[in-house]
Image (spheres, rainbow, N blue to C red):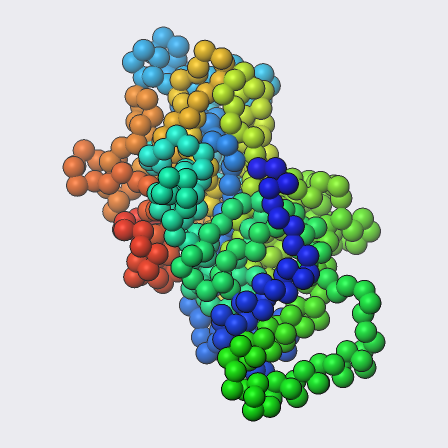
Length: 466
C-alpha cells in the first residue's frame, strides 16, 4: 500500500475522534487527570492484561521461503510430478537465501532461509500451517484475516479482531487500537475501539503535540477552570452530549500534559532515547515508514501504556509473479521477520509485574493474505495459492516450538486437523483451519467466551496455552 492511500490526521481530526470517543464511552464529568488514569478500568477491575500486535506481510508471502518450507532433498526436481512442490531455494539470486531449511533452535519448527530472524525468538514461537483462505484475491484474504469473516464481495464484514480485543479492557488506553499502514474496520463496537490509522510515527507526533501559540500556564489554568465550572452547572450535567464533551476535553488535556508525542518523535536527531530506538530497530530519521520504524511505534505504544493493540505493515511488495521473486521475495520477507524478532526481543527485555516481561503478556501475530503457489510459473515467479500459514510470537506460549496443522505434501493443500491436538487427522470430524480459528482462540484467551464477534468457529485449545 502506498503512503498516499493513508489519510494523515492533524490535531483537529484527532480531537474530533477523541470527542466521539468521549461521547460513546460515557466517561464521567471528572474526566482524566493524568495519563495513568487511562490505564485504569471504569470500575477499578479488569481482566489480566494482554497486548496484541498484528504484523501484516503485504502481497501474499512465499511460505516455502518462510514459515512452511520443504526439504529440497526430498522435494527435488525429480519428484515434482508427484509432490507438485518446488522449493526453489537454488533459484534465489542471493546466496544466503539459497540455504536449505533448518529447524529453529530447540524446536521442531522448520524455517526457510527468509525466516531465520525467528531463530532468536524460537522458544516463544508458534506456527499455524495448512490454513485455508478460500480465495486468491488480495483484498478478500487480507480482510478475512483482519476480521475473521469472509468478505461480501470485496467488502469487509464485521469488526477487526483488534477492535474486539481492545474492547475487552474498555477504555483503559489512550489509543486502544492503533494501526500503522494497515486497514481496519469497526461496525459493531463503540468508536473508541476503532483503529486510529496513521502512515508513520510522524503522524502521531503531528496529532499529539501542542500547537503554537501555547498559552501561559496561568491563562491555560484559568481557561480550564472556566470549562470545569461550566461543566458542573445543571444544564451541562443534564446533557449526555455535554457530559461526553467535557470528558473528552479532560482526556485531551491529559494526553497533552503527558507529552505522549515525544514517545514517537523518531525524527529527533539528538534525543538519546530516540537514537537508541533507531539503532535497535535499524532505521534513520528519514526512514519513518520502514518495518523497523513501525515495529518501534508498536513497542512505544504498548510499553508506555498508550495502546492495547497495534497493527503494522511488516513488509510490502510481496506480490512476486515474475522473476522478481528470485530477487525480492526472500529479502523483503526477511526484513519483516527481523522487525518482528527485534520487537519480541525488546518486549522480552521490558519488565512487567510479578517478574514477567511485556512479551509474556503480548501476542505478536504475523500474517499475509495467502501463500504463493508451490510450483514456479513460466515467468520465474509464483502466483496466488489459497493455502496460508501464520506465526504467533510471545504471550502465554512460553515453551514455544509448537506447530498447529500442516499443509499437505502434495500441492500444499489445507488438511483436516484435530483442534484438540493440533495435528492432522483422517477423521472426518476434523476441521479445516481458517483465520477465524486464530482470532477466536485469542478472544477466548482474553476471556470473551461468548462468540460476540460471530466468528462461528471454536477456539483451538492448544494454540495459546503453555
